[in-house]
Length: 171
Image 1: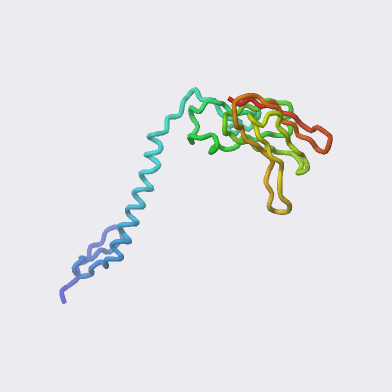
Image 2: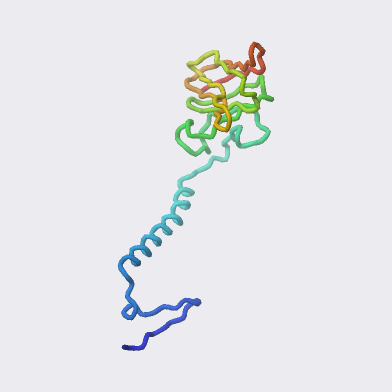
């Protein structure tokens, strides 16, 4: 047998392929890893190239901690074609009496209410709401969705006591 030629590069020992042939399965595995790595490196730059944030875009209620529960009807800097894929607008109990601005198909979640509170929409052609559901560790928060353009009033009640109202404008 001949002498194996050894090259040392960056603490890595490489040997000639005729002395140590690579198995077909190892070659496929190495090729797959290289392809996945190249895809992972190219994907963020391709997404960055297509994203064109607008300098004049207004932030939504979720973008700032002190904002009132509203959402801009402008879609300039938002990612996602359908409002149903956006993060829901948080409607806080402490902001009762405020106006919520939404676009069609945008969702919202009520926060800060006890589970017994029931919600009602004055116009279900504009906004539909649902109460909190579930018991124990599996629960669903109360919330709703804008279904059409117009205005509505949402009333939150605990028994016969009105605990909050919100005006909703959907564009």
